[in-house]
Amino acid sequence: MVVDRSPGRSPSRDDTKPKVAYRTRLGRAYQGSAESYLRSAATRRLLGKVQLILTSPPFPLNRAKRYGNARAEDYEEWLRKFARLFKQLLRRNGSVVIELGNAWQPGRPVMSTLAIRSLLAFQEEGGFNLCQQFIYFNPARLPTPAQWVNVERIRVKDAYTNLWWMSPSTRPKADNRNVLREYSSAMKHLLTSRSYNSGTRPSEHRIGRFSFLRDNGGAIPPNVLVYPNTKSSTSYQEYCRRKRLGLHPARMPVEVAEFFINFLTDPRDLVFDPFAGSNTTGYAAAKLGRRWISVELDKDYVRGSRGWFARR
Image 1 (spheres, helix red, strand yellow):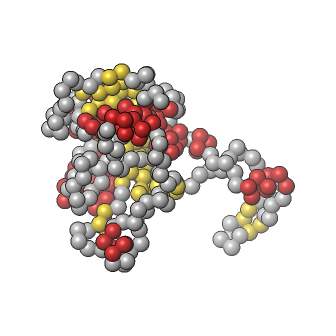
Image 2: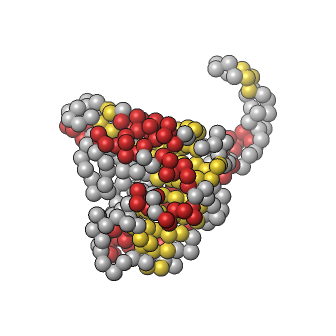
Image 3: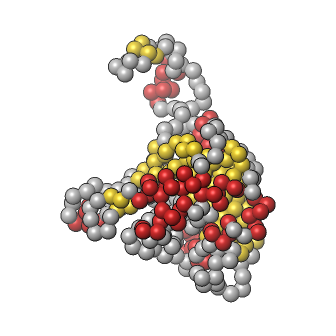
């Protein structure tokens, strides 16, 4: 059940003091700026208690979007200032997962290194260890950048984003047994037949006779996550249509959020998203029995995010 806590008036985007917009059994959604929330008294009780910060901050784009992306020339310093604020919220074995898209130089078919420079500045400022790089590949993504891909035909479409997993610890809480994939038909046959071609491979790795004959309940996934993100009838989308609210244009697939929440947290752990957008993180956390807190600046996106928790 969602308890509506939104104010009676509709705040402008300049009214950034965080307010509880709604609550559920496991979480709270705030409307306001991430900076204001992280520096407010509301965060004092969270210090050292967040297990996972999972977020997709506005990307450094050449054109301003409604969801508030920083200008490219300001992005590195803008992202850097969150590093210490994030670190003080985390448990000692907690994790930060940040999704960063690719950026292009204005008016030129040349990629920008701004995203990676910003990440490195964030990592250095917070003293984070880079645990692993992940790629989210969307095979259904539209061809972009349009000028170079569709018009001049001199580039191929940009169809992935990076997700960077960092932690104050070199051994944060993580268990890949929680994200195992179903075995392929070939692996299932191998386990049944108990026959395997052991020996030395061209890579010079030597594979023992029984190395791949143990059933571990599933296959360890790679660090490339593939989801088409083409769903058109989620509770969030249906709610926004009924309420005539605009859909967030850069929604993280629920499956991506579920992967990291399963991998890096346990039930009842606290998950935080300071740039919540449509609040996919909060929904995925609640679905998996985790507590959650989200913060989003745009009041209409906050209103629409209630749809994840609305009864059909």
